[in-house]
Image 1 (cartoon, rainbow, N blue to C red):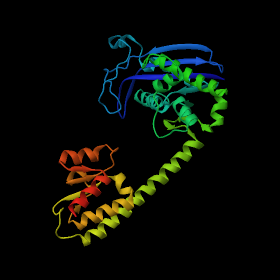
Image 2 (image 1 turned 90 degrees about the horizontal axis):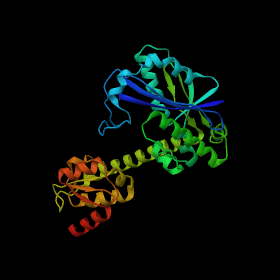
Image 3 (image 1 turned 90 degrees about the vertical axis):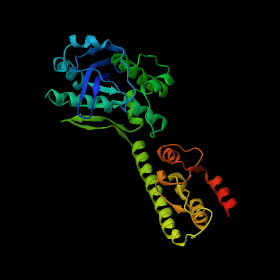
Image 4 (image 1 turned 30 degrees about the vertical axis):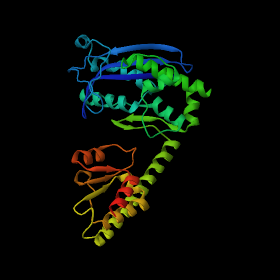
Length: 320
C-alpha cells in the first residue's frame, strides 16, 4: 500500500466552479518514505480572484501569477492526476479533503472529463477524532504547529508534504500505523464516485452529531417554554409603571435560563414593560457579559441599554 498526500490551490472558487492552478502531491510508502513529490502547476484559464471563506480577505499564493499562462491546462494534466488518485494500491489523504475533492469534481465537470473515483482519508478529521473535538475546524497550520511541522502555507506541494508529516506524527504519537489509527477510531473513508461525494465518518463523530441534535432540541424546547410563558404573562402586564413604553428583549442564551428569564420578564411586566423578540426593536437588552454577536450589535446600534441578568434585576428593584 502506498499513500498519496495531496493538496490543491485554485485561482478562484465559486459555487459552480473551481479553477485549479496547482496540484501538489507527496507519494510515500507505509513507513512515510517519500517515493515522489511534485508541484503540478496548471493554467487555470482565468484570472486570480483569491478570497477567504467570507469572500473578504485576499489570500496570497506563493507563486508568480503571471507565469501560469505558460503551464498546461487541467485537461492536459488530467491523465496523470487521475492515475495518481485512482491507483488501487494507493490510499489518498488530504487535509480538509472535502474541499479539494469538490474542486476536482467541479473541474472534471467543467471540462467534460470522466468522474473521479477514489476513497480518501482526511488528516483534519483524524486529528479531531484523536482529541475528541468536533465543534470546530482545525487548519493545517494549527495542527502542524502543535506537532512541530514546518512548511510554506498555500504552496500545494508543501501543504501535501505537511499533511504527510501530520499523519506521520499522529501515527508516531500513538505508535500505530495509519491503517491501525483509522481502525482504532472507527473512521470510514470518504468517497467520490459518479460525481457524488461522501465525507469521512466515525463512531465518535456520529455520537457527536446525535448529542448536538439533542442539545439543539433541548434549546428549542426551552425557548418555546419561555415564549409560551411570555405570551401568557403579557396579558397581565401592568398598564402603568416605570417601564411604560419601554420594550425589553432577552438574548437567546438568557431565554434558555428559563426560570431566571421568566422571573425577570414577570418583574418587567409588573412595571408595564413590553417584550419583543427582535433585538433591533428593543429599548432594554438583557444578555450575559460573555456574549457577542449580531443580536447584541443590533440592540446597541438601535441605542438600547444593555444589562446582564444580574444588572437588570437590580435595575428593576430600583424602579419598583
